[in-house]
Picture 1 (cartoon, rainbow, N blue to C red):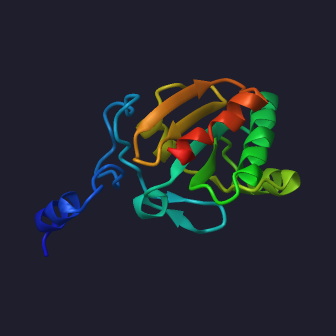
Picture 2 (cartoon, rainbow, N blue to C red):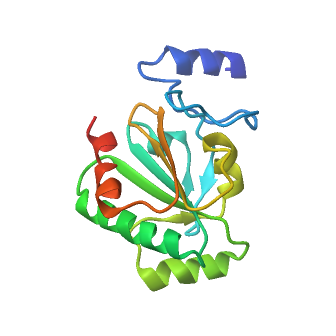
Length: 168
């Protein structure tokens, strides 16, 4: 099966094509309300998260730095969301903007967060947002559509409200 046939088959499947691997770097971030071309992302623990792993799940990506107090408070609230979400189809990924993976691993371990981190912010950011500040929280619904791009620290009630995207 060649690439064209594989693409045609993928697009013919029910619900397919909404959240698919990126073929090339986007020229602009995904617009709110548009399907996200999810790239392959490697987590710090060595696992990879591709389109197949997030299909049918709400995804929250936070771009953060380990020395950012606003980021730390938002990450603490995201941790609470993950722990409270039980069996909801929700994935949270922290995309570190720091240059040192060892420092990010130590940060994640020190705080005991219940969600993984990646050093692939440079892969995710062009797909999700043009914002260069941090923290920035991006939310993708279960259908693979970008729903929110939230700059700055988020209040606990706002973070807990992100669970709605895993319910719909």
